[in-house]
Image (tube, rainbow, N blue to C red):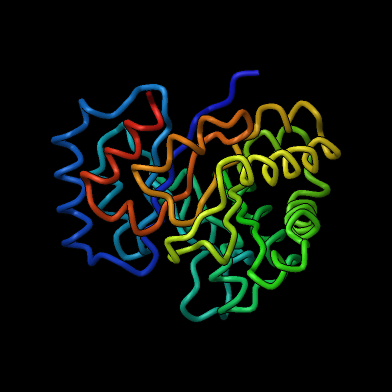
Length: 252
């Protein structure tokens, strides 16, 4: 089965509204260089969502970095799925390791967020990955399989068809270190097998991405693997030329 290739920029806590506008305007001038066979999305800070909704080239989808699972209420500083959907958000990153580690997001909370995103017609990108201690203890596969199952179990096949998973080894994020493409393929194969226990059809069609120190000069090696359908990229997505280079490398 042919799967959608997907490149997602996670800006994290970077770029003011003015800087996001400048990025979008420059990306608009380089739209002709973007490959047609790759779905592209940018996930800015919440403050820039409305601006990018208006200015991003139509080829590039709008995404968010986080969401609360509750529809409304006394959750100071949070944002709901309904609010994101109203802004034209199509993708939402859920369960990023920086949220799990820094803000205490346990598996059950991640699962509730997935359902909130789906309920409002958006696509969750579920992040899974092991830390260095878990890697050294040979626990990588058990960790990612457990996180994947916890986030997606109980979903109907039509819901699973609107999900993506991103494997981000925590030890690789921002470190400049990466697993080999073959090692990443082994882990992502295990993730796809876990999804297959929930729905074989959904597993074959679900985009599964790699993330963790992805750059224009190494992304092609990852997406050349049979089960790696794209990338979730942090620092290398902050400059237009680099983002375009990532997209072009995926489209070759």
